[in-house]
Each structure stands twice: as C-alpha cells, then as structure tokens.
Image 1: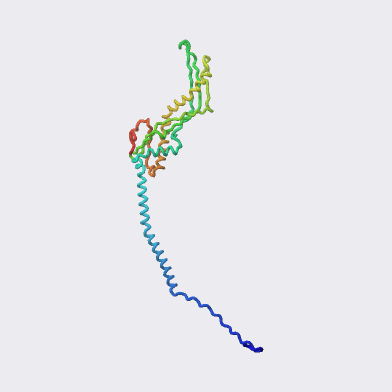
Image 2: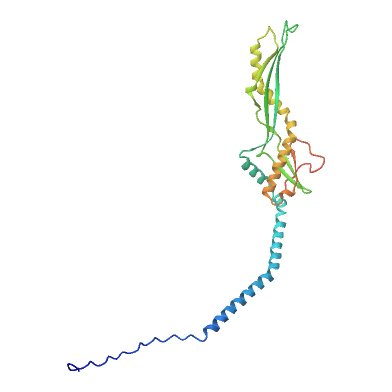
Length: 267
C-alpha cells in the first residue's frame, strides 16, 4: 500500500501471446498426387477402350441396320401373304381423297348439238322442209373410279398388277355462259321456238351419251393416273414400295397378252 507522496510502483505489462499455427499433415500432398494420377490413368483407359470398341460397335450397328433393311424389303410381299393390301389401299385412298371416288381424267370439248325436225303431210307423201337448230358450248367430262368398289392386287415377277373398277363419269358440266343457239335451216311450217326448247331439253341427255362414248378417250390417261396413285401409296405405305412397278387394268378390259389373266387374291 503506497503512502502519500511516494512514487507509484511500476505497472508490469505482459507480452502478447500468439496463437499456435496449425501443423500441415504430412500425408495430404502424397494422397493428392495419387488421386490426380489415378484420374489420369482411368481417363486414358477409357479413351483406349472407346477407340478399341468403336469398330466393333460400328459393325454391330451396320449389321443391325442391314437386318432391318432386309425385313423392310419383305413388307410388300408380307402384306400380300396376309391378304391386307387391298383393305389397306382402300382405307388409305378414301381417307386421302376425303371421298369415295378417285378422279382420274377430265376431257374438255367444244360440243355442237344439232336438232333436225323432219315432217310431212298427207301421210308422208308431201315432205316439209327440215328445221335444223344447233347449240354450241364447251363441255367438261370428268371420269373417276369408285374406291369402295372391288379392287384386286397381285404380285408376279416383281410387278404389282391391279384390277381396278370400271371407269365411271360424273354428269357432264356444260358452260352455260358460252352456250349459243343458231337456226341453221328455218321452216315456216313449224314452230322454231318449240324446236329450240326441245333442243335445250335434250342437251343433258346428249352430253351423257357423249360422256359414255368418251370413256375410250379417257382410259389411257386414267390408267396412267391410277398407276401413279397406287405407286405413291406403295412408296408411302411400305419401305420397299418403290421397288415394285404397277400395271393397271380396268375390269371390263380383256386380259393382256402378258401378265396374270386375272389377279388372284393372296391369303
């Protein structure tokens, strides 16, 4: 205890104590080096194995693709053996066209319709002058096949023969905007207006007769269109469809000199 007037005792200060530094483990560096070396070795082994297996994998995949190609080349023949080709074609064609008819040809002609009125008096002993009236107009004749009719397919010598339904035709379309009438030979003994009306009434009947007569004119165009349609269907439906040419015969036609006389259903 200090007395008044005496000097205070010196204050002792202690030196700061530093915290101990952590000691580095002696095994950390070797282990890290071993891990890096192991990763490099495994990576090298993987690259080597991939390079070694690549030719084998490629050959395996190529063999698999070849096997699949071989299977697809038999699809058309398999469809014939299963008896499904006709059903599949009809279903496809009806869906694609959105109707039951396949339009195959259109024939446009400028038609001349002639009405000749002959008459006589005294029970045929006194002939009267003829009355001749003509009508002219462009007419379009459209021909089609019924997709729901009987279609038959057969395959022979790598060719698909199609027995298609007979060609049918729509009601002819007369371009009434260009329809003209002309009196070629007049007669004072008969009514020209009545003869004109008779001609107008008979135009529809005459165009139907002409449509029937024009089937032969439309047949070859229709045959080509039908063959192309069936060929496109084969190409889309079967992987090997393009390998089979198509020959079409309409039902009313006589059988060709070569090829099957009548397609037989496969089943």
